[in-house]
Length: 261
Image (cartoon, rainbow, N blue to C red):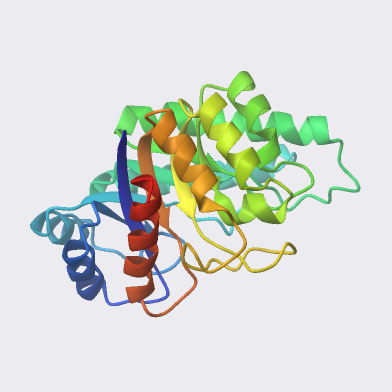
């Protein structure tokens, strides 16, 4: 089992302070949000690469997500995918090994045939995978909260594409895919789920992006699946908080579960 853990840096957090915290609490990498603070048009790639390297950390990015990259409308999808490709270029310059993108469209689920939307999702995933591989950045498609595609659709995703996946625990839980079902996904498709967004929620209705152990999700189930299958991948503590210290608390709890404690 080789599980590397990191945490998300966004919301104008102090970059250097976050890197120091990552080192202090034995995180292996950080994940940068390219939708705002680390967007390609406002970030110095050399600064990012040098800072991360100086701290002995690896790097993952969350690619821009205020796009419609899986739109069933061809021209909309084309423009959005081109922007993601440009972001992948920037991520390569940052030194990132992996980039998360959303398996989502803004298309109205009452007006579009789900099969048509699925084909658009698969098309985008394949295109980004090919593009990323050529630049040394692995794109991973993340489940969102949509009736057109959610975590329960990952078996079809891995069957229809060669793309890798990112399992978001909070998004999955909010769409009825509980910890037991998530553990099953990892046991059956862990060779294609290369990245996990770890976050908790206290409600069945939505995701709150809280630290591990503060909500309803049974992370022991997920940790057991990781340990039993000798899963290898990256796990980002993706938390909606201005205090990155909670990421350290979340890691401490998850480390204990991975150890079977």
